Image (cartoon, rainbow, N blue to C red; front, side):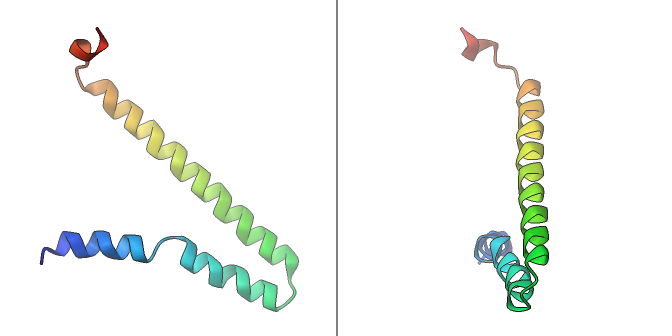
Length: 72
């Protein structure tokens, strides 16, 4: 089987939420609520920044494609 398919499969299986669960559970088990809040905030900001970056790059890439035929 093609290795690219396996790479895509592992990306979807090991998503970004699985490590977050462990990173949040450890401070929660230690009753370190500022640690839980910090990890959650860092994860949230990283996700938002990643989404904004992907949208920005996609829009910049779409501006390079000739779309005059489709705009009519």
